[in-house]
Structure formats: structure tokens, C-alpha cells
Image (cartoon, rainbow, N blue to C red; front, top):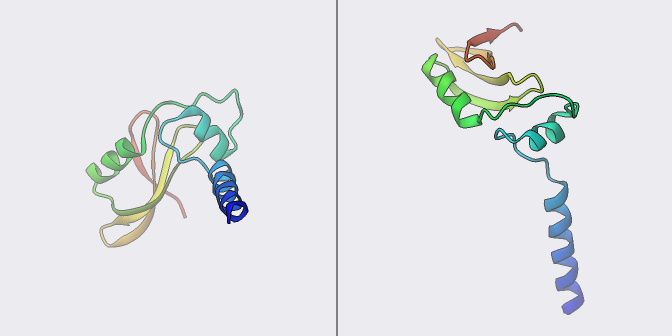
Length: 99
């Protein structure tokens, strides 16, 4: 019984270690998740701020929100009843991306 308990704990620890880190403005997490170059400057913008900006620009049903190495936030969502790809620049500009 002790051996199987150890195996479960070891497996959980291994899965936790290799799970991709969420991008929440953390430089190291963005570099690991997006394969960013260590010399890329990742700003501290957060997913919550990006969501607020997208919603303020009237984008809804947002999903697949991620941050690129260039500090642009990207998402998929809806606007005026249409599915769109949307981006948020590091300077706060929200724009629809091309298909």
C-alpha cells in the first residue's frame, strides 16, 4: 500500500512539473509556454487586463486567449454576430486580425 501511494504522489508531482505554465504576465511562464527567446522582453500585462480591453471594444465570447513573445495578446471571439480573431497590442490598441 505504501509503495502505490508513493507512485501516485510521484506521478502527480511529475505531471505538475511538466504542465505548461499559464501566461499571466510572468516573464518566465511566457518564455516557456510560447518558446520565446530569453532575450525577448515580456511585459507584465495580464490576461485579466487583456479581457477588459477586448470587452471594452465590444468583443464577446472570448476564448483561446494567449500572449505572444511580442507582447501582443491574441484571442478568438465574437463581434456583431461574427467569429473573429482579435489582438491587443502592447500599447492597448484592440484590432481584428486577418483570416
